[in-house]
Amino acid sequence: MSADDDSEGRLRAIIAGRDGWDAPGGHHSWGGAWEGPIFVLTHHPEDAAPAEGVTFLHRDPADVVRLALDAAGGKDIMVFSPSIGAQLLQRGLIDEIDLHIAPVLLGDGIRLYSAPGGEQVRLSPLEGDPHMTVRVGYRPGAA
Image 1: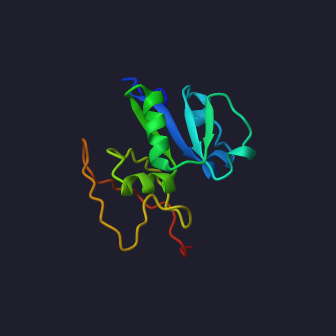
Image 2: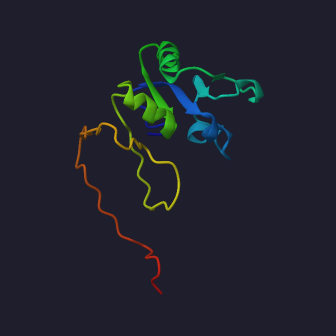
Image 3: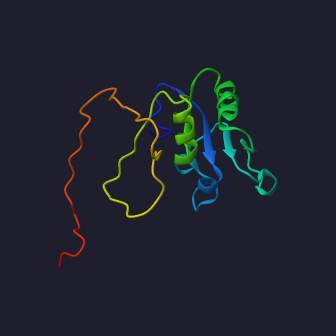
């Protein structure tokens, strides 16, 4: 979803992690088109550079969900962090996952959800075909 795609006006607040916030380009949700409250979870809020509309917090993620929901006025919040998302998913605090699929396989990175030995999380599509077929543009080791 992009800020322009939110035609129903559902999205009203963002929860982000400090790693993503500090990453190059991390300060500009949807290329700077986002206007609304952003809550950044961090172990060190004191060393974060202040930014308009951004609150840096060292709190339990479930508490931050409550703050974001209040700020959203009953509308949706979005989580921009796989590790925070996984914690909220384990606590039953996520009811939808909006997957953004890019036509590339990553050899490294942070998993969307990793809980070895944990409960399986079943997902069901809200609309459309749950499958996606893509053409492989590069094969490792191929000449």
